[in-house]
Length: 331
Ligand SMILES: [Zn+2]
Image 1: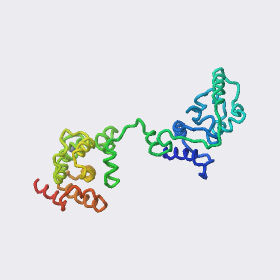
Image 2: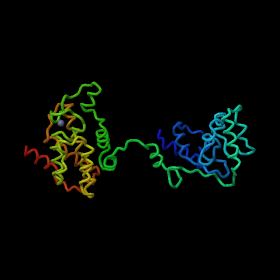
Image 3: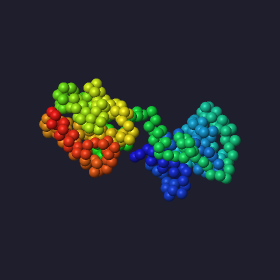
Image 4: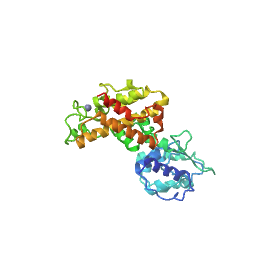
């Protein structure tokens, strides 16, 4: 289950006592509990809503961090339920420590005893601060940032997920950019039957990057489509080895007002190339530019009807069939 959601439950349980499930035990994964514990700083006032042993309330640290030897002698139940206010009444926390303590444990206990001497409770409610937001309040966005800290960033995420396109096409392109499509290279790695050469150009090994970018079939396709909107100069070159790189560079050279339409067009084009490839592999059809240019306008019109308003900014010819027919007539 979603880690951010589980973290939010812990936050609400801590800060919103009006929740009907406030006092119940919620099934939360241990690493989520650890993340929450590391992300929360408690400011003790009356001490009734702060856990004595595990919450970070004493100089920004928890007692378990400050005196691990002592905490190891406390029952799990006391660790997870004893509040600061309960613990400080007549120093009842001592009653939960099982003796004997080691020498280090005794040293930690004495330091702890001194530190607790300075604690004064008040009548106010305890305050809890989420460390990853300036406001101190929990947000799912900040939680995700912490969870994904250090992970690899998927560079084209904005172009892909913020662009209008049917979800299945976006999903396909997401897999393609991550080299997760079942092309020859991937099949070969797993010892599975695979085409020896690219079924579209019969010249190079089939990879998804080649299929969508450097393949002569793909480049002729892109050139025709892009030339129709005055962007023929953005056609990928034979040296272009990475689809996402080419898309990023090409997108940067498109004016802002046409960018969304351009990005939708790229997804549509990649999708048509993939369909054409699958027909070649699974139905034995010969790769055919005239055929893909008959398929492309049909898909384009379907996308427009379904809501791809951004295409309007491209000024593509009204009758897209002409794009294909004019090309095929020139073959
Ligand atoms: Zn090829």
